[in-house]
Every structure is written in structure tokens, then in C-alpha cells.
Image (cartoon, chains in turn orange, cyan):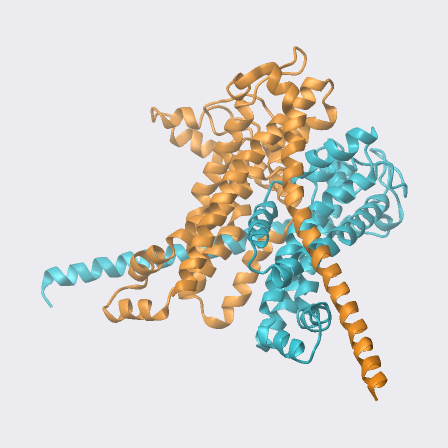
Length: 325
Length: 285
């Protein structure tokens, strides 16, 4: 009798031990994988800093403000790509944000219910199209079209306006900063729209219905109820889109023209950080050239990291406010 | 109603009409962009789509040829990258949803992962170049796989965590009450309940990397010829499209459009399948 109980006890103990063993294994394995994600970010930063040291040592902080980019004399400066990156992303936001918010308003307020899902899905499919497709489409379809229509019209329309004529000067090349910005504005649509739509849907219908009950029009409800309520979320979504626009590579590489200079005209060819790297990295000879390109990558990573981290913090704050209610 | 309030009413009405018209226009614009891009792809790519594309390697300019080596290279690199990235991603997501749900580590990893999710992919290419290509001294398909695997990781981590958090805690508690240890609960209850979601995450990750060009430009480079050597540069569709589209040769450009059509169809199909899987799931509830 006594021995039987002991046998069962030791058997149960063995099973318990085995389970404890497997639990410990799975716990530490999953933990290790989570830490890999952290190491990845650390690795990226370390590798970029290490790779860009020669260039940063050679040029110092002047690297950020120098416009020259001359592989022959090995004089490199990041001003033109940084300018191109910021300007294309800024114009893309200028066009993309109102359209995205418009689509989100349409989906949440105006769209007949059965059409909601198909239209949301269609807009989100824009995010699924690979960026190289936007690039080839931009190069062969959009750029020639702009060269024939929009660009001559812009040049003509603003010819005599003092400040704007600078902005839209020069021959219509087709490719250039404006074309790249237009393509980027299409590419950020799905990202901003889906987040804006999601946060719009968190507005309690009680609030909206009260406003409607007071006689507000749909626009007034959106303007005075929905947008103030979801401000942090919308800004977060916009910054997420901005992060995408800043880092986008292939679509821009096709249509920007890869010219290392800052020109006042938006119709002129320019370059962005990512386009410079994509175009020149495999052809870069000499340590300084390669290192300068990696330094560009580091700058891009720092800019996008700040923007994306800001976006996530805003969205997190929005979620927490949501949870408190 | 007096005249003043009437005009105020009219003004508000008109403003509303205008705003709603603009919202409609915005949606039309978005849909038009999608249709325009897809239509262009079909018109330019469909004509060049014949058997040669799948049976012959990329040609020198002026010659007949197909995209066989590029399609093969893309498939191999995508599959290998998914095989490397997905298990790590699922395990990391498991930690964040199960073992370390409210720990500091999970919070930090979640934040970093979200940032990595939309970090520029070309930076990942630079990273892998520094870590693999430079020490090894040559471009290789392995480096391309590594770059793609790094891009797979955050997508899978994110969806795994989201999907596991959707599994109700009462299921976990019920299993624990029956005496199941934690690792069995995760394996037999949580993974099973979240299976459709996990598959969706993987498919979305595959869709994301199969069109990626930037990180491959200086990792796996490109190869004009048929190659199965993972230690050598390997052809892949996106880079071939880039090279052919920006070339001055018309037959190369035609092949670039065919490649673009193939990639887009594959990616959109993956997206639609992934969506219908997760859609069916949310409608069940």
C-alpha cells in the first residue's frame, strides 16, 4: 500500500519536473527571440555608425550642410539629399493628408454599409502594391503625362507671380521632385487612411448623435466632434505616413532624376537620401564614398526613427485614453 | 424663419455639401489611382506574357528570353527568408502575449518592433551589407535572405502578439484548471485558437518581402544567369525589373512590365487570401 502511493508520487513528480523543464525551455526560448528584436535595432544602429565613421571624421558636422557631391575629388556633403527627402515628403503630406482624411470621413460617415468593407480593402490594397511598381508606373506613365500637361500648365500659370515662378521654373522634365512627391502622396494614402478610419470609429456614437440632435451638419460633426476627439490618433497616423514617405526608396529612385543639387524649382530633378544610396552604393569606389553613403543611411534612420517613435507614442497615448474610458 | 437665420442655414448647408463632395472626390481619387496602376500593369504586361517568360533566363539586350532565373531566385530567397524570420517572430510574439505580457521587456520590444515595422528597408540592406557582404567579401543570396528575414520579423511579431491576445483568457484558465502546464496551454490551446491569424501574419509578411527591392540591391545583387549557389549573387524579380525598366532597350522594358505584373498579381493574391482568412475569423465572433 505504502509503496504504491510512493510510486505514484514519484511518477507525478517526474511528470511535474518534465513540465517544469519544458516550461523553462519555452519561456527562455521565446524571451531570447524577443531580445533578438531588440538586438536587431541595436545592431542596425551600431553597424550604421561604424560604417559612417570615416566620412563623419573626414567632413565633420559640415557633412550635413555641404551641397557638393563629387566622387572624383572625394568631396561629399549630405545637404542635397536631405533637402530632397524633406521636401518630397512634405509635399506628399500636403497632398496626401487631406485626401486620406477625406477618404476616412467618407468610409465612416457617408459610405453605404455594404460598400464599406470593399472600399476600405481597395484603399488598403494600395499599400500592398510593391514600391517598385509605383516606380515603373511613375516613370513610364505619370512622368510623361505630367511633362505634357500639369508641368507646362504650372509654369505658364505662375510665370508672372513673383515667388511662385521660382518654385515652378525651368523646362518640364517630367521626372523631378514634384513627380516623386505626387507618387509618394499616393503611397502614403492607405497608411494614413486606415489609421484615421480606425480612430474615427472609436468616437462614441453618443457624442456624434448628440451633435446631430442639436442640428449639426455632417461636416460640423466631423469638424467639431470627431476631429478634436481623435486629434492625437490622426496626428499619429500622419506621422506614420510621413515616416513611410521619408524612407521610401524604389518609387522615388525611378522618378527623382538623381541630381545632387538643391534647386528652387520643384520641377527640377533632385535626389533623396534613399535614392542616392540605391543608385550609387554598388558603384561606389573608395572607402570615403561608401562611408558617405552609409552616413546618409544613418541620417535617414535617425530622422525616420524620431518621426516613427513620435507617431507610436501619440497612438499609444490615444489607446490609453481609450482604455481609461 | 427670418432672413438672417435662413441665410445662415443656407451657408451651413452649402458648406456641408462642399465638404461631403470633397470627401467623395477623395475616395474616387484613391480608387482611381488603384485602378489606373493595375490597368497599366495589365495593358503593358499582359501582352508579353507567354511561355518563354517561365522557361528562359534573362536575355542580353536584343535577344529573346524570359525571367526564369529571376522568378526562381525570388521564390528561393522569399521562402528561405520566411523560414528564418517566421519562427523567431512567432516565438517573440508568444513571449510578449503569454509569458511576459506586462513586463518591461515586452513593452520595450513592442515599441521597438512597431518602429522597425515601418523603418526604411534600404537601411536594412545597408546593415546586412556591413554585417555579411563586407566580411564575406562578396554579394550572396544568403545576404539577401538575411535582409528579407529581418523585414519579415516585425510583421510576424506584431500579428502573432495581436492574434494571441485575441484568444480569451478563460480558455487559458480552463486548460490550466485541467492541470495543463503553461507550455502545453500555449501549444495546444493558444496556437490552435489563433492559427488562422498566425497564417495571415505569415502571408502578409511574405507579401511584404516578395516585392522588396531596396534591401536586395546590395546584398544578393543580381545575376544574369541561372544560379542555385546560395553563396553567389542570385537574380531576383524586383532587381531585374529595376535594371530592365531603367535600361534603354525596349525588349528589356517589355520584360520589366511582365515581371511587374507577375509580382503584383502574386502580392495582391497573398493579400486577398490573408484578408479573407482574418475576415472569416472576425465575422465568426
